[in-house]
Image: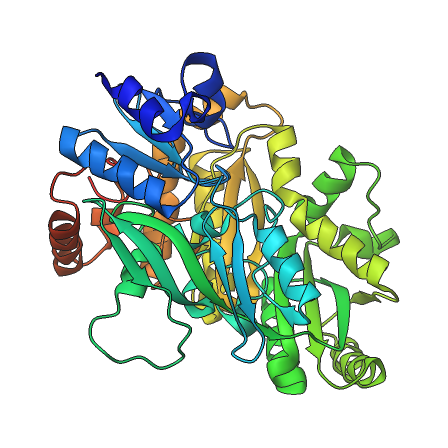
Length: 470
């Protein structure tokens, strides 16, 4: 029996995809990476995942775990050899249970993030992970990349939001680690080892997630500013005035928002006149557990004092849930506008907030000196220091010209990130995109330890080969 016949016998013929049926799975969301696969398999449960992994381990077949395929670093795309099997987890999409007394929910890896958010709301709870791809990304992918999103400032990223995991190892064994405990000091923290490993150590099939009380009220504002320094001052004011109620604090270059309304005319830019032309904007949100009136009063005091002090030039405070959604939709549409305009060179970096303004100013200048006329597309989560510092083609540039410079642009930007004590990957992972750059910036001992972990947990090297490590 050959490989395809064996896989069909395990899963059923309709869940082993080849040829044209496999093509949507072999290209990434940005259409920057395209490979080939022997097959795409779609197991229905953890038992079938275990069976597939064990079979591939016995026959030395590379496996590429894949969730919603919304990643930005090529972490779920096969190479062009056609030797790998893509392990799609989309059918593992059950919410196994919600425990409101323990404030936890147990979900499978193929659950769409938005479905998990909705199930938590229906139970009177909040699952706070929120990001632009939440309608299509999966919990398994969120865990594999240690996703962050817009509410990390208050709730943390996926490492903070997951209490336990169920994992199929590279040998096909199942680790039943779905404990809903906040305290469990019984040895090495395997959970944190698999979270963020991008499927290179094993396959996450389910997780126990933390839930939180639903906020009674939310307030959202879009602020217009003259500089990143002013945005950092505003962040300090918001932290001091709102405390733990400060849920999100986003930074966006004005050009990003103007691109959104140009690409999507149905969206409205809420400022007019000089304010609409300012170079920087911040979107901040407060979540209050007391009342709408209490939230609004605190929010207006903090924003009003910032305007009086000259820190903020103009402000729009949402008057309704619909207006709040519209402001967030502007922010979340920036990557879509980028894609509409054309391919760009993306950077997902983490910078100490205190050095953010210095980094942006000096790196902008260095890029313009090296590559005159390129465009800067800058936005991100200022509250936790995560910047999406992207480089797009200028008016006189062809897309191919820009992409031909990708390696040079990455080196210039990443060297400057490293120089200010930052990280070249904040929340998108490493994948193929940053794999070869990693040794340039990571401590040699750290790299050696990572290789040792990989060799112990995946001695055959079949789990997502070519990702994260060379």
